[in-house]
Image 1: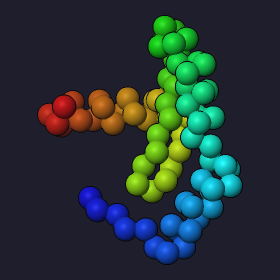
Image 2 (image 1 turned 135 degrees about the horizontal axis):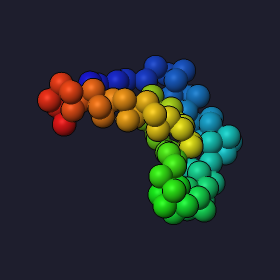
Image 3 (image 1 turned 60 degrees about the vertical axis):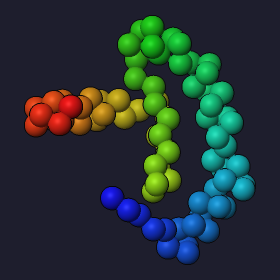
Image 4 (image 1 turned 180 degrees about the vertical axis):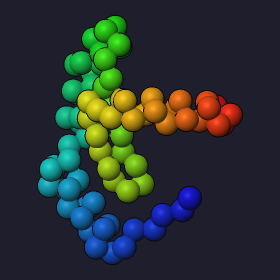
Length: 77
């Protein structure tokens, strides 16, 4: 699926990044700090950046597992 941002959407993305309101280095540091512990304990810890510029940290593990289960059920995985 293709997605083209509007001019306003792109301006907002730029503003979030340039202002450090969304700081990717900080997000990476958090994942680095807690990632091993999350993996060892089986705790969901995610950081996602999509074409829609959506970032989720620490969650939505349960939703991802539901999509995975649906894909398996439908024979897509």
